Image: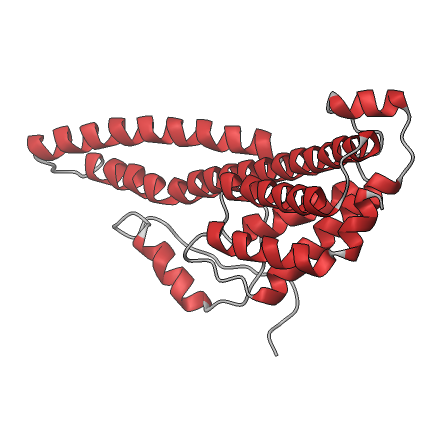
Length: 258
């Protein structure tokens, strides 16, 4: 019996072993039920078994050992990326993700050693199995890191975007105070200091915003949603300068509300 055949013949037992360990390494605030855990294990194990059945030349094996992927969009790699997407969405850290694969490897090899005679062919099967697991781990970690990095960049962009309005209000208010006809000397010094500080913050925010745009593209992702415009307008009014020097005009595009 080959190792890939063994995985499929003892699939339920391997899933049981892995499910118990996966629940132990899951974050405390994450509640993955048995169905989710078993489905994850089944997909990983079947994908690894299928990959082991594919014929592989010496050159292909050498390329795999050096992290080269002949088909980055293969079904096997998509399984690894999908597992990373799922775990990242449930709040896993990368260490917990890797630990799941470590448990999967240990469970399969332990049972394989107990039930099969470890001859030269069996050792070759184990090498092929380890290569498949390593490849899936690499694909999952790469995907997990890419998702985490994009979330970080998105947060940076949203933060820079949202800070622009209050800083702009501070600058405009300082200009209004300095333009007052009879300001006290204390007010002038305070408003001048406020304006210089706000200008420095604005420069930092602009740099942060430019950085986020180079990472995310020319525009930030936007999710349109229904909102009460009266509350939004009230918030805008709070950020405008005093003395009524700013006139607000509201214009809209798109379909009318029902």
